[in-house]
Image 1 (tube, rainbow, N blue to C red):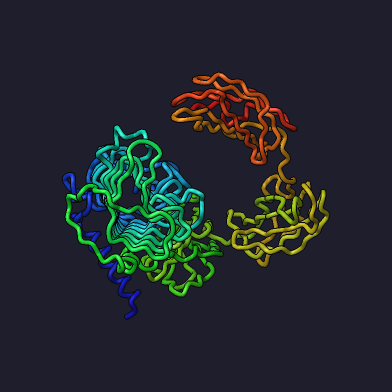
Image 2 (cartoon, one colour):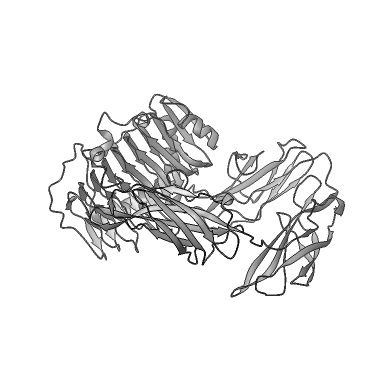
Length: 632
């Protein structure tokens, strides 16, 4: 038997144990303050959609629940509150996109285990998990990817937190790959001092993690047996104002600034460090000779030279090992029949592919439920549990031998009917200009063909003609699985204006019914032509002007009504509040931004800034402003 097979079996056994066990033994700081028990003694439920997850995690108050997450769940664009006394467990292959937040004491005593999470879209607080003013939280064997603000952040006097055996990683450089912030500001000492008791052990900071691993203000944080494997980072650990860090037996591999004290105001942070390994590291390493807190709990240190192997084998969902999911399947097509929908998609090419899952909903873009019991071994599926006349929406995922599941494929839909489709029509024409040379564009038209049931038509031959700045006749472009045929003009011009008309559509079994074309879609007009400008955003802030004093600074962004930034616009504005300045004719740059800085210099200023006028080549329409005034 292969090692990977053994790992997979062991992980499944662990998952089955978690499904039937209500008590966990939290360690580190989470074992203190009365201990962390999560949903122990509560009802076990399994959820596979956002609505059910929110029902049990947020809407159930402090009732204990063990919530098992199945499949892929995309949460709404806000933070989802996890009320107190919950255990949230990710089942093999599950994934959550969004922000979970524990806020205030009534949302304490929670356990998060085996969760695979991302917050690529920066919804809610922008983190994967946010802990704010809570006690007794244990986060264990999770994988966090692309937290837009941070992966897991802890603030406002939270206590008794343990983060163990987790992977923190990013898939791209957002400029804010800041993984774990503890204590959110220097001026919050009245709330945070004596609190923020956190343990990090056996975690893996991995690809493109740049900062905050962790960054600590005021807290007493124990960091031991972690693996830092993120070359190209800015720094790993910072001890900031009023903090105490005990850093033991970690392995730092080819990273910059493993740990050091960083304080701009107030009391210096303190570091006590011992038995850490630095392989090919550069930059700052604090002597680590301070005397900090003594952990009130027992723990055993692994040999730091063995940490990489131990952590890579054991961290993250699925007990470590391979944590990279397959690519989302492509080419999904849905063909309606009488009481059936036949699905087909392109084969994935991964060598460790284990199979596919098929999900269905009656709403586009959400509410999917898995149809297959065991994994599908082939890239096709016939759904014979449908009702004629109902439109169904499908996505598929790929799963590898380590139980990593891909994101959803593009959606395909079909409406089964008692008789096959006979006619087709033009459902839409989408026009755009695409780059063909510096500052030049060619025309592109995307024509979508549907049958009389509203399903996409595959394999239709579409003929069409450009006119205006282009004069091209293009024959026999073939529709794909989405019913779309793409036309590209041969010319390459600066800011072209053009139209496109469909002249004919043919298909092996369907007849073109031009009279059924969506009104206005036999021909389509050219790209957007801007006619006016407006204020897209006002971003107020402050900048230092000496000591604790600050100026007010505001960035105003001007767009046109096609969504383009406007350079060279003259913007007039007024500060009120702690400042009373009138600014005339600040000029926007290529990003459409004009910057205003007050003349005053005040400690902790509070102010409002309003745009009075905008002068540009196009008329200013203040009625379209996203905001006209904003306050600091």
